[in-house]
Each structure stands twice: as structure tokens, then as C-alpha cells.
Amino acid sequence: MTEPKRAVVLVSGGLDSCVAAAVAHQDFALSFFHADYGQRTLRRERRAFRDLAAYFQPERTLEVDLAFLGSLGGSSLTDASLPIPLSPDEPPGLPSTYVPFRNTILIAAAVAWAEVIGATAIFIGANMIDGPGYPDTRPEYYEAYNRLIELGTGPETHIRLHTPLIQLDKAGIVRLGLRLGAPFHLTWSCYQNEDLACGRCSSCRLRLQGFAQAGRRDPIPYAAA
Image (tube, rainbow, N blue to C red; front, side, top):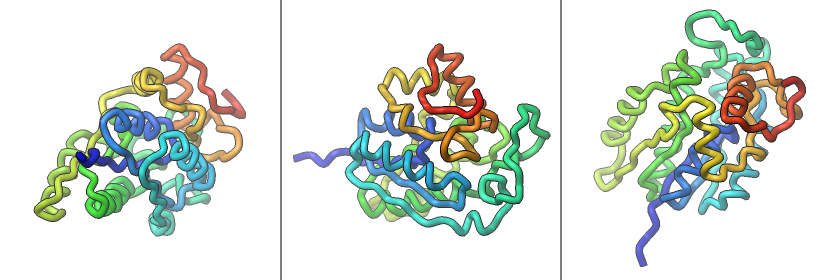
């Protein structure tokens, strides 16, 4: 009997990672990876992750503690003393919601797990259009990371990072998810609330804009929208 192709999907619980999981689900047996990195909305994201796992029924799930990233500070996503930006007009430079080197560390942990379980692919819902200020959402970053994986794993290991959303805007991601039957009602994207999405942070605004441009209503509840 032929072994299935296996993929690890980095699932935050948000819209993008949900669609990345739906893409991977077409060709791979899935394993879901989720990280606590000290984010403000950890409990709500973890709930979304578990709801998505119940929906997609991956072979394995792994929740890892990377909370030291929050202890380092430097991001409004992890430091409660820094306000989450609510204005559409953000200053130039790195957004305050950038978590220093987060994706690099999360992917490294996922690669280690993939090597252990025999997965050949890692899917992440990164996209460069929605977050042009983030250094770790660029295609060249993932090209370099694939080279690092090749150099840093065992000789019999062949793991490749997949970024199926990298060139899509939020409307394109929503349309792709609709086509694949992605369970958007189970996801959570808000940067600051855990009950009703705020509708004002950059993540909420992009999400609402994406659904509006795709001609659909966002199924999650908002305090202001």
C-alpha cells in the first residue's frame, strides 16, 4: 500500500491559514501545527485552530509553546503596553504588529516536526500583498528558507515550503477559499478581541474588505463593521 504524501500546515486559526489548509487538503494527508508565541488573542486563536482541526480531521495536531517570543517584546501583538494600530493610515516602516523573526522560528519548529513524521511539504498562508511591510512575507524569503531546509536537514529528507497565497490579495484568498469550501465561520483574525472582532485593526479591515470585494458577507461576528 502506497504511503500518502504528508504535509504540515501552519494553522494560526486565521482566514489565510484556513485557505492554505484547504489547498493542501487537495493533495496531502495533513498535520496541523499551532504556536503560542505570546499573542494577545491566544485563547481565541487556539479555539479556532481546534475547530479547524475538527473540521479537516488531520492525521496529527501539535500545539507548541514559543511564548518566549512574546517575552522578547517589540510587537503590539505580544506587548499589551503597545497599542494595536486602528487607523488605516499607518506610518512608514515596519508595522508595530510585526513580531521579530516570528515566521522564521515558527517554520523552523514545523520543519523539525515534518522531518520527524516524514512530511514532505509545509504550507503557510503568507501573502505579500496584504503585508508589504513584513520582511518575512516576501517570495525571496521563502526561496531562501527552502535552501536552508535543504542544507539543514538529513540527506534523505526532502521538505519544501509551499506558499499558495503569496501573490493573492485578500479578495483573491476569499474567492479561493469559497471555491474550496473553506470553513470561514470557524476562523478568527482580529488582533485585539476574543469575543467580537473589532472591525478596526488592520487584520479585520483587510478581512472585511476581502469579503466585500468577493461579494460575500464575512460569517464571523463583529463589534463594529
